[in-house]
Length: 267
Ligand SMILES: [Zn+2]
Image (cartoon, rainbow, N blue to C red):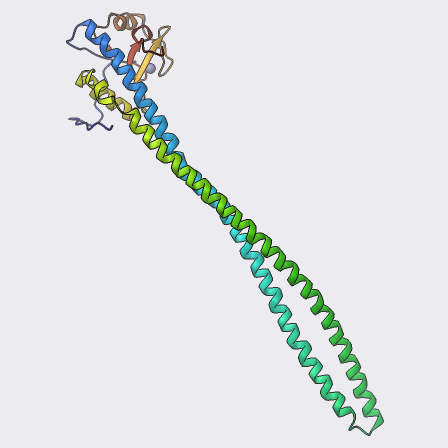
């Protein structure tokens, strides 16, 4: 669909009008073809634009998975640290209990009553401390259990989301393929249409299209240019209606076609 253009100079100045040698009827016939060519190219441009939005949409959708994935990562980290805290505490409790067992055995050997009482108090105090630690262990066990539930739930959510996103991305890729096919179909017949316009005008059309965001042809309605809404000189409108030469808008430089000169099937 793209035209290879060869310009002797880059961005040559655009004259206000191009005069063609051909007679009026031929120019009039070309107005129609050029207008249809612009319509077709605009459609393709629109199709390309909508296809161009798809990759960004895919990135956005895939980003929604990342949010869940990092949330799960954080929950897993919390779970691991709770488990670590729990196993450390279990070690402490075991060590403390072993110590008390050892002291209790020693207690039987002590004959001095003051020493006996001192050690008993210490053992008692130690056992109370162990009970507190065991209580803390119990709380940690519940926290670990809750956190495991949280992780499990978030894993399911992530898996559901991943499946959903996979489907959506597949749909978008299919849509993109469809759009590309539409674009190809839309260009069918473009060559035939382009052949109906004189090569000089066609070349100008392509140059303008590149420079003016894809719209090189403007229609004239109520004496104003549809490309820039500026009012044209009445004399230029008269010239345009005579259809003996091509006119371009002095403000936006687009090739002008009068609304009465286009009578397409949907006009
Ligand atoms: Zn204009």
